[in-house]
Amino acid sequence: MVDAAEAAFPAEACGLIIGRGKGQLIRVTRVVPAENLLAETPDRFELDPATRIAVEKDLRDSGTKDRIIGHYHSHTDGTAEPSATDRAMAFEPEMAWLIVGVLDGQAIQTLGHRMDEKRGNFRPVPLRTPKAK
Ligand SMILES: [Zn+2]
Figure 1 (cartoon, rainbow, N blue to C red):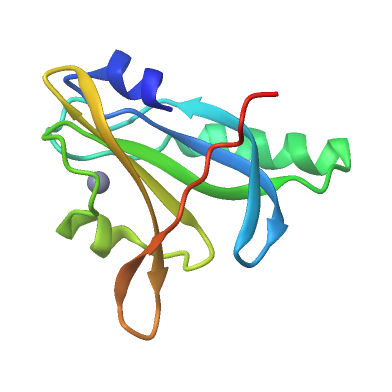
Figure 2: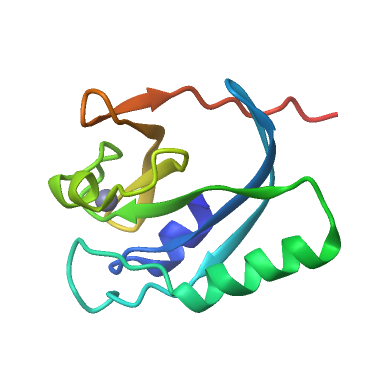
């Protein structure tokens, strides 16, 4: 995700996060980059719905327990906090939002968020990278 974010700079990268698990313990199993349909518009992203449809079909057909658990996108001003636009676009409370802050083409921070419907705002989701074996 960090690589994709840096490669897309100065546009925003985006993609889907596939994983499994429940509640606080969700494990990411795969990341699928998607086309940003708003790549020409600064500070906006719209994930190509065709990618999501294809991934959902693929997951259904394969009978896996994996599902789309969220998506990622990048910010080109270095911030990894959701923008006002992100808040306005958060329709699906079960989706995790991962934001990679890129500044001058280099990813400087990555944060996870999830929409808290009661508060109408994002709350942080802790991220953990498994130790290399
Ligand atoms: Zn954003």
